[in-house]
Each structure stands twice: as C-alpha cells, then as structure tokens.
Length: 344
Ligand code: NDP
Image (tube, rainbow, N blue to C red; front, side, top):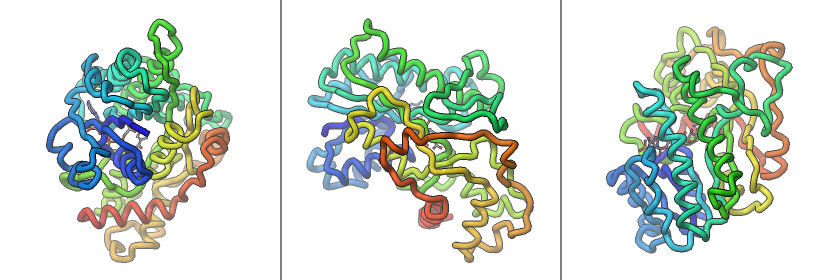
C-alpha cells in the first residue's frame, strides 16, 4: 500500500519504516530537515532510487498547514502519525510540547480530510501516558485498559515535566478522536491509536552521537556508563514496557492488515519491568561491562510490591493483533548490542 509516515527520524518510526519497506510497501516519510532526510535515504539507497521511499521535509508540525502539501501525494491509503516531542529539553511546555503534539495531530487529520480522499485509515501514536491517571498509579484496585483515560488537563502542565508530557499525549489523542467523531470535519477515514508504555529495543535510526539517544532508552546508557553502580534509580511510575519492534508491528498491523482495528485504542504491553531487573539482565549477558554495573547486592530500582502498584489488562489488544510480545531479556540484550555498536 501507499503509506505516509510522519517523524521518520525517530526511534519508533525508524522501525516502522524498516518493516514497511521490508514488506514491499511504498512509503513517504517526513522529517524536519534535509540532513535528516539524507540519512534516511542513505540507509535505503535502493528504495530511495526506485521511488518506493520518498523523504519529505515538514519543518514545523505545530503549524496548522504543516501537512497540507505532503498529504497530496497521489494514492495515499494509510497514514501513520508518530511525530510528537518526547524529550524534556524544553522551556515552555505549551509551545514546545503541547502545541506540536496537538496541532500536529489535528493539522494532519484536517489536511487528510480536505485533500487526501484515498486515505482509508490513520494510525496515531499515542501512549500509556494518555491512559494512566497519576492519582491512581500506585493503587492496586486500579486496572488500566484500552478504555482508561488520563484525566489530565492543560491547566496541569506546570505540575512537573512528566505531567506536561502526559498532557501533550492525552490532549493530542483526545483531539484526534473528537476530530473523527465530528461529521463537520468530513473525515472519510477511520482512526486507530497505538498506546505503548515504556518502549525499549534496538536503535536503528541515525544517531549523531550517543547523547542524542531517544528518551526511553536513556536509562540503558546510564546503566552502561556506571551511573547505577552505587544505587539503582527508581524505576518510576511507568513499570510496564514493550519492545520497539512490536510497537512498529502493531502500527503496521493496525494500519494495513487488520480492518477490525478501526476505531480502537491499542494498548501494546509486553509486561512489567524494573530497573533492578534491567541491570540484572545486562550483568548476566554482558560481562565486559561488569566493572561499571551494579552488583546483585546493589539496592534500588525494585518493582513496587503488588499491593503498591496498578494492574493492567491489555488482553483485547493482544487478541486483536495476535502478536506474541517480545520478552524482556531479548529486548534488553538487543538494545545493549545496538548501543555497543553505536559506541557505548
Ligand atoms: P523520538 O524522539 O525518537 O521520535 C520523535 C519523533 O518526532 C522524531 O522524528 C522527531 O523529529 C519528531 N518530532 C518531535 N518533536 C517535533 C516537532 N516539534 N516537530 C516535528 N517533529 C517533531 O521518540 P520515539 O520514537 O520514542 O517517539 C515516537 C512517538 O512515540 C511519539 O509520539 C511518542 O510520544 C510516542 N511514544 C513513545 C514511547 C517511548 O517510550 N519511546 C512510549 C509511548 C509513546 P526529530 O528527529 O527531528 O527530533
């Protein structure tokens, strides 16, 4: 099929691109700058030459007309919208986080509704951030599922950087569902959202340096560089995870292979994890880092006890997608291998 993939320079999108091209789909992907476009073309010279891969520049997704031109690519059938800020290097959370997330989402949906009548489905990369409720994260009587919604509002974005990020994802996803629900918008496509928790896995996108590692893999670098030797840091509230290759596969199945996915939120989860388990897997598999790693006795980063953590139920998603989720040890090993290759 003909697919538009936004944010092609990203950690998750790079895997989506790799899998799409491997399956023989024709892809237009967007990035912010020509140097990022060149790196992607260099990674797929044959497809770039044949026209199966086109890289388009969309400099600022927070502009309401950002996607007007690229959606006019003839014959587009499916759009996968992954581009959204996931980092904490901002000063103004409204301008630099919420606006690109929300306006980016509404502007692409509006552009498709107006100018791309051949598009039948749009998949938006949302997040567990749009599912969880910060007030109930440590509450064992709470079960998060595909139907759970984060109650966060724009007024909360100054509470903490994490809350601001969660708000950006929640408001963007809410805006997407509202857009397709309102007949005045004239959407002829249906919508799917993919809502992953912490995404780990090998890096296949271009990294200018290890310092530019994507946010959800940062903890691997910290561990490998000796920052966890004295004490393993807290795992944080997001104690569920998924491998990036499964997130990519979920986008492709939802967008191109499973018609019944239309209208659904997909909660892609492999399982629970903790930083202490992560360190143990690295220690077991990579003795060459032993000196820098915490030992079996190093404290910190344990999973909270059962009575102090939320439950989740993503059985509807697992059943619909039919994916046998990659397990933690394989994911961690493959992540570390890729970071070693990148110079860690
Ligand atoms: P990356 O930071 O690697 O990718 C983010 C992508 O979005 C990049 O292509 C980036 O472009 C682009 N982007 C960010 N801000 C802007 C902006 N203001 N204008 C244009 N493009 C922008 O992170 P991930 O791959 O992890 O994230 C991809 C998606 O997955 C995001 O929507 C994120 O919220 C979501 N997600 C990620 C999770 C994770 O644990 N990794 C968990 C749940 C959801 P550039 O390369 O130029 O910076």
